Amino acid sequence: MTYDAPTRHMRFLMEEVLGLEAIAELPGYGEASPETVAAILDEAARFAGTELAPLNASGDRQGARLEGERVVAPDGFAEAYQAFVEGGWNAVACDEAHGGMGLPALVATATQEMWQSANMAFGLCPLLTASAIDLLAQRGTDEQQKTYLEPLVQGRWTGTMDLTEPQAGSDLAAVRTRAVPDGGRYRLFGQKIYITWGEHDMAENIVHLVLARTPDAPAGVKGLSLFIVPAYLPDARGNPGERNDMRCAGIEHKLGIHASPTCTMVYGEGDGAIGDLVGEEGRGLEYMFTMMNEARHKVGAQGVAVAERAYQLAAAFAGERVQGKTACGDATIVGHPDVRRMLLTMKAIAEATRSLTYAVAAAGDHARRGPERFSRDRAQRRVDLLTPVVKAWCTELGVEAASLGIQVHGGMGYVEETGAAQYLRDARISPIYEGTNGIQANDFLGRKLLRDDGEAMRALLDDMAVDADALADATHEHLSTLGAGLVAAISELRRTTDWVLTQTRGNAVAAGSVAWPLLMQTGYVCGGWLLGRGARAAADRGDGGDAFHRARIDVARFYSAHLLPRAATHATAVRAGAGAVAETATAAVLGEL
Image (cartoon, rainbow, N blue to C red):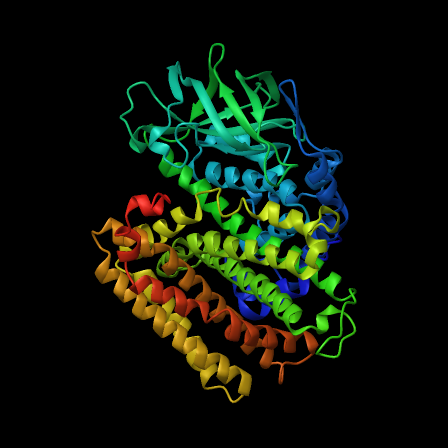
C-alpha cells in the first residue's frame, strides 16, 4: 500500500495547462519558478510516501483514543507531525512576514493533495490549521496576528473551527454557546461537537475558532460572533501557559478517518473559557466563511487525493492479479475490458478533479496578486463560483473512485487486508463536512449564480467556449472529436443556466430541487474543459510527444466518451424542474405509502 505522488501530472498541470510561469510573475511569487516548484514537489512526495503513507493503515486500525481528558494520536503520528513541522510543510503558502514560504496556493494545493492521499486522517490537522491561518491573516488584529500566526504557520500550534452543536447540526442559527464580556476579553460557556483534531498530543497548543453569542445578541446567524479560544493561554512571551477552561468530553466512533479524533468540546465548566473577539460582534459567521471557503477547497482536494490513492492501489492489483482468459491480450486482469473501464474511470476522475481543484487555486493566486483590480475581481468571482463545485463534485467523484477500487479487487477488496476498503470508508465523510454537498449546491445556485444574475457563470462559459472551439478546429483527429463533444456540452450548460435564471428566481422550492444536478452538470463540463486543455497542450508536443503526453490525450478521450455524457443527464434533471421533488407526497418520501 505504498503511495507514489503523481508529481509529473501535477507539474504538467501547473506548467503546461495553468500557467505557472505567469503566476510566478505576480508580485511576491517570484520564487515559484518551475525548477523550484519541481524540487518542492519531489521533496513533498518523498515525505508523503515515506513518513505519512506507512502510518495510514496502522493509524486506521489503532485509531485515536481518549485517555481521561487526554486524546492520544495513533503510534507514530506525533513523531511524523514533528517531522512535518521541522520540514516547514505547514508554511508553503503562508506570508513570509509570518514565517511562511510565500509560495502560490497552486503549489500548496499540490502538497495538500499529497498529505491527503498519503494519510487523510493526518492531513486533516494541517488542513484546518491552514484555514485558521488564512482567517486570522485576513481578520485578526495586529496583536492577534502577532500572538498566533507565527506558531500556527510553523505548525507548533494547530487550529480548529468550532461551529456546530448537538441541537444545531448545519443550522448555525441554532447555536447557543455563550460569550460573556469580561473586561477586554470574553468567557465562553457551551458545547461544540464534531471538532476535528479538537484535542490531541501532537502540538504544544490548539487554537479554537469558536462561534458564540454575546448576551444581547439577536437570534439567528446575525447574533453570532467569532472568538479565538486557545487550549493553553499564551503567556507574556507568547508561550503556552495556563490551561483554558475547556476539555474534550468524548471522541466519536466513526466509519472512517479513525486516526483523526472528532471531539466533543465543552467550554466553561468553571469560570468560563477565555476568548478574544475576532473583528466586530455579530459578524462571526461572515468571518467564519473565510475559513470555511478555504477549507472547502481543501476538502475538494481530498476527493482528488482519495481517487488517486484508490486508483494506484487498484492499478497495482490489476497489474499482478491473474484470473480468467482476458480479451485484450494481457495476462493479468487489466486485460478484461470491464476492468480497464473501471481503472480508466478512476484515472479520469483523479485527473479531472485535480485539474479543476488546481485551476481554482491558480485563479485564487491571480485574485490575490494580480496587477489590475479588474483582473483580480474577475479571478475572485471565478474562485467564488467554483469553490462549491470543487468541494461537492470532487468529493462525490472521490467516493465513486474509492468504490470502484474495491470493485477492481473483487471480493479481496471487501476485506480490510488489501486496504481498498479504508479509502472508501475515509472518503465518505468528505461529501458531508464543511457543509454537506447539498448545501454546496444551494450555495452555488443561490449565492453565486442568482446573486449576480449569472455574470460569473457566463464569463466561465465564454472562456470554456473559446478553448472548445479551438479544439474542434484542430487538425488532430482526437482533439477535434474532443472539441465537438465539449462544444455541445458547454452549449447545453449555457441553456441550463439560462433556464435556471428565469425559472427559479424567487422560488425556493424550485431552486432547491434543481441545485444539485446543476452543480454536477457544471462539474462534469469543467472537468471536460480542463482535460481538453491538457490534451491540447500534450498534442502541441507533436502528436502527443512522449508516452506521458499521449496518455493525457487518451485520458481526455475516455472522459469525453464515458464521463462527460453524464452532464447531459444532469441537464435533463434540471429542466425537469421541481415537480417530482415537490409534488410527491411526504408520506411517499418517507416510505409510508
